[in-house]
Amino acid sequence: MAPNTEQNLYDAYTGESKAVTRLRAYAQNAEKEDYPEIAKLFRAIAESENIHAYNSLKFMNVIKDTETNLEESLAREEKIAQVAYDSFVQQALEEEKPAIATAFTYSRDVEARHEKLYEQALQHLVSEDKPSYFVCGVCGYVADTIVPEKCPVCQAPPEKFFEVA
Image (cartoon, rainbow, N blue to C red; front, side, top):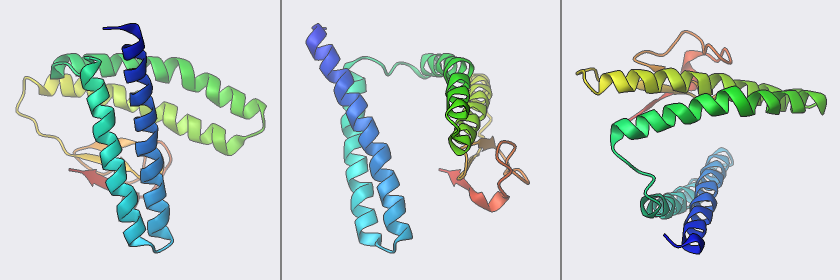
C-alpha cells in the first residue's frame, strides 16, 4: 500500500476511535444530566464513527481470522500491562496525582485480566463453552461466567457490573 494512504488510514482510524470513546462519554454525561435525546444522538454518532474506524482497520488488513486476532490481542495486552502502565503510575505519583495513579493502576491490573481472558478464549475455540462476561463499571474489570461479590481490582459491589451481550 502507498505510504501516504497507509498513514492516512491509520490517522483516520485513530481519530475515529477517539471520537467513539469521547462521544460515548458525552452520552453518559448527557444521561446523568437528564438529556436522554441528546445522549441518544451522541450514541448514534459514536456508532457512525465506529463504522468509519472499522473500515480503516479493514483496509489496513488488521482484521484477521479469530485465532490470529486473539493471539495478537493477547500479545498487545501483555505489552501494555507490563510496560506502559507501570511508568504511567510512577509518573502520576511523582507529579502528586494519586487519583490518576489509582486509575492507571486499575487499568494495568485489568489489562492483566484481559490476558487471561484471551488465553481462555483461545481454549474455547476448540470447546463448546459459552461464557458470559460482566464488566465492572468503575474500573473495567471483566469477569467471566459470574459476577464476583466485589471487584477484585477496585472492590466495587456486584451492582456496579453489567453484562455484555
